[in-house]
Image 1 (cartoon, rainbow, N blue to C red):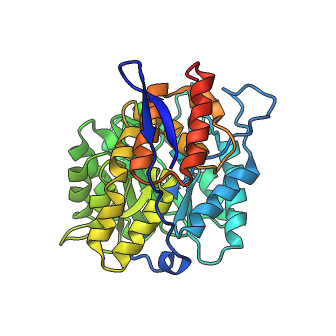
Image 2 (cartoon, helix red, strand yellow):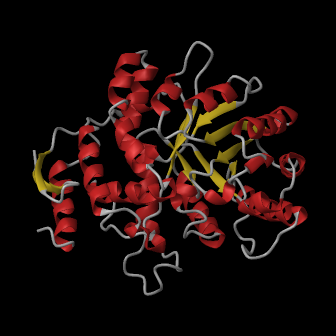
Length: 388
């Protein structure tokens, strides 16, 4: 295996020897999952686009869609145009709609694969004070566009609604109007303020317990219109509490990138399905672990997934909204894209020490597909920073 000199917190270089990577599961194993598992997928930037990297969402469509096929080959679904794709952080609605169109076209040639698509209100002018009616119409516009393409919906939290709403009743009114119109059951996404500070106080309360009751009230009022709810609060206890209060037939999709292994495994009262950004980064391990779980091998499931948790906690450490940098960095190390450049210039959002520790943790989690390639690319990055 490869050996590389990595920087440490005491400003030294320390030799690190990589280990054996995980063995990818077989196609037969990936067709028997007993959990629904979506990976929220990132986009691959076009490194040769001639434009402002901070303002222009120049995307390499071929590489971006190739990454979706990689996830589908591993038996995972794709959650498209979500926050992992830098939605609201470099990817605007125009580009998101184009991304969704490309992904849905690719899925048509893959019978049985799963794909869901994010809808929001991000095309509204962020400087304007949108009314409740404006927000509903914005949701309706995106819903109409994606349903026309044949996409299933994830109703994303709205920054505009977080600004405009004055009471929990405002949220109930907006979601009630939206849900009455959708053609198929949707996934509701509760994204916590640790992922997006603009969403603090969502559902009309700063206290998550009170906010949960409002969200649950909306779900109980519209169970036939809701496939499930994805919560991203990084709290095992809050997710389990909400999961046990859901109506029969409504799924909990864990968005907890800190505690996903335990939540997917479940307990005597139930389990969570998954819609996770970390599954983009650890797709082979996620697939292999789900295959073990489906075969009744709970110990094998934890044996594969638990070593990935320290990696995920590192990638999603505060400020959590910059986790996309780690996801794209790992895709580059693994040869799934040819460069470490992101839309919005977000490759610069994490420190060199953060990326070095990510390399170590990825190796310990056995998710470096080709340790020699990963070490070579890491060495080039270090050399660029004067650490040859």
